[in-house]
Each structure stands twice: as structure tokens, then as C-alpha cells.
Image (cartoon, rainbow, N blue to C red; front, side, top):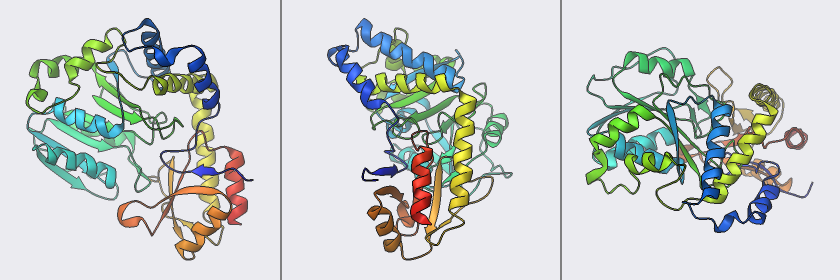
Length: 352
């Protein structure tokens, strides 16, 4: 095998047929269509419809578009809170959300833990926004959806925002309890970076538009801008039209396969990878419990990490390093739809 085999957790392996769909995009002349055209409206609406089917998104919620998950974090903080936010932190990306809040001067609080299971921290009744990450990409830890839903039940007045960047479309959220969720293109959807998807309750957008918290925060795209344009499947400024088109095609393809089949295959591959990382002399599994991620598997080296990296690189296998303080202590492997059984079995042969 001479081509590179990507197990990177983002940007990730590219979803099958993306090259064909890219050629299709140019052949249809969409590359020169502007974001007020009927062609663009069709592309946006198609993505909207396919995501609703795939992720069971109700009509109560709008689907806005941005450039990344990180941008959406900033948009949420600029538009959805006047003074106070609360953050559940169990890794680098949930901490990034918290740090963004501090950067714009919010009165922000946090609860840090390796796992969120049974204990619920005290959250002041004046808290306007609660932020939690469903699947922490930096640590390979997920938080059960029931725990997330219970946060809202215990704090019904606060806005609940859920980062699903590396678990969409597999995450199963109850949108009657989740006000906001978001994800990006370069993880499980198997696309290049450049698209962020922001799912938000429409009643909330109306209230926040009236409150206009972003007026003194130099916000590029406000809730009002996004909501007004969404009514006709447009965007406030020129977006990544190719990325939007491709995500619509990927979501449609996933729907053709069926969500149940996608979930089953994802879990089958996860269990195979977990068993693989327990029966070789190169890598061990960092987490093997109910809170271990389905889509991001963290491993630790059983030999020097340079030896392990060299073995993988010689075999044209590209994975992700550990993140932040774990950079030279872990290697992370993706389990996304674009990670085929053929590639996973090849990884197994190399490690054995």
C-alpha cells in the first residue's frame, strides 16, 4: 500500500466520492454563483433538509452556517450572553470555549473533571449560558447525552450549548432540551475544513435578536443577520459554497445508507479498534470504559513514541499526535465513516 492512510482526528480522511462531487460542483457552474442566487439557495436548502433527516433536527431549530466550530463558539458568546456563562471542561477544546468567554470579558465560571457522570455542580440561577462538549477531541472522552439533557432540566432558564464537533452526526440530542449545538466539516463528515454548522432554537434567535448583545462586541455576523438571511436560505456574507455543496452530498449519501447502519458500522469499527489496541506490542488503549469516545481513540506508546511514529510512517499511516500536554504521550486515531474496514485491517496488520 503506497498511498497515505489517514487516521487523523481532523482534518480527517476524506469521505468517498468527494473528488467526484467536487468535479460535479464545477461542471454545474456553481463555483461562480453568488450567495443571493437561486442556485445557492438550492444548495443551502438541500444541506438543511439532509441534516434534518440525518440528525433528527426538528423544525423548531434553524441551521446557520459559519467557517468553523471555533468561530461558532465566538458567535455564541457574542450573541447569546450579556454577562455570565458556565463551562464544563474536560479537555483542551472545552477549555478553549471557556477562554473565549474570558477574552470577551464575561463573568464566567467552570467545572473541571476528567469525566462527567453522576455529579452535577452548582450553577448560579443568574447564569445565562451553559457550555458543554459532548465529545472532547483532545482526550477521547465523551459525555452521555442523558447527563447533558439533565443539565438543562436542572437549569431550565439558562441557554444550553453543546459542542458536537467530533461526534456529529452520531450524537443523539433531544432538541427540546438542547438550545444550541454545533459541529464542523473536517471530522466525521470527511471534508476539508471550512464549514461550521450552528443549530439553534428559532425562538431563542428571536429573543436574542431583540436583546442585541453583540452591538458593542464588534460581531461580524449577528444573530439578526444570520436569522434574517436564513429565511430565504442565504447567508450574510459570501460563504464556502463548495464546502456547503459537498456537505449536502455527504449527508445525502449517509441518509441513503441509513442512520442505523451508520451507527452500527461505527460501533463495530470502534470495538475492533479497541481490541486491536489491547493485543499488540506498540500501542495501548488509554480509555476502555463507558465514557470513551466512539469516534476518537486515544492510545499510549508501549515503546518509545518515536519508534511507534516511525513504524506508522514507514507504513504510510498518518494519525494524530496527542494534544497539548499529551502531545508526546499519546497518539489519537479517528473512527469516522471515511475510515474504511480495509484501512483499519491494514493498521492491524502493521501493528501485529
